[in-house]
Length: 440
Image (cartoon, rainbow, N blue to C red; front, side, top):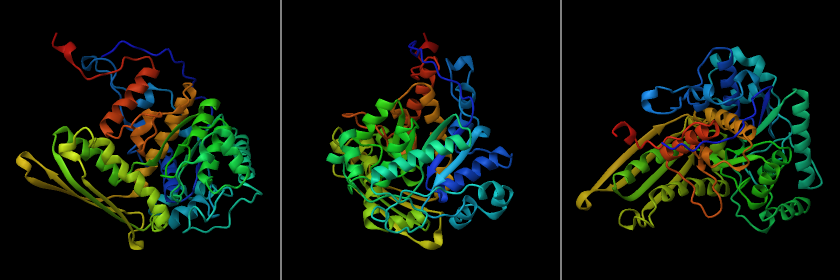
């Protein structure tokens, strides 16, 4: 262990916290329904670190392992208020039924609560998401005007519900693939591009800009180029706002960040990793468009190379084949199925295989991530943290890191980073797991 402690003063989580989601589809409605179900005592927050995980403090012999929610000052679930934007005008109950994730027996007891959540008109453009159409869309002479309208929405929502703080978590669809360019380089260039209606300024960037300008943490649940551009990184630091990652790490990629570190830890070789998915929800329909799939593919492909480090271990991982496929299959709905065939190599170059068939529920896995990111981001803001929150990499397929740094993808290193950050901010000793003090 180390004796280094933080002098950080964390403001208390007093008052109400608003969680705004661009997107009121399967993920957002499952998240909102789940929190309300927990609040009325009908379910437990399974999958949520903030609600169910413990954190060890001090030596193992001290036997101090409180729940994270009892260790750090987090917003109470009872103090959360939900809001959303969506191009489809359906309220949260209608949207949840349409998504087909939750059974009616789980929706009926909270139907009145969900029906009261109606989406604000969205900033939406078919150029960036071709498979969705909706009439609940903002109009403006340029993207700057649309961004300012989002800022006004945030202010109005905060005033209407008498909120103390807000967090924005992107739960909308995957946009087409964009590369960082001159329009993204500085705040001035970005805002000029907004005024010029530049195609390089996607709707998700406008939400991120609006949130940061209003002093609201922003989390990106999709693989879009969004808050992870130099202009918005600069803005987040200037405004003192936490931002984090992109693309929720839910199903197949989550398993990759579990299995790949195990292969590497044993110094086994990898010849190839073939991944395919079938899903039939709105996300699957959007990803059926090649331009949107390219965005998702880039996010999924980056994980293995970052974990296995083929440059450092060329004998084991140089030029391994990594193929990712996503197939839209409407009968499956939100119940995604992922197949992985992993060709590994052992002693004396003998081949072996690992095969995984993961029948997961995409939004069921994503919902607690939305909750944790919102609560941790709010906590980070109250702790005076700003810019990239690398300790939240645990939740993302594409974590953010400072320029020149390779993001960490190993789930277990990410978990250690997350918990040590909490210990640090609360003035506790960090834990290295060295353990020599028990044998001195």
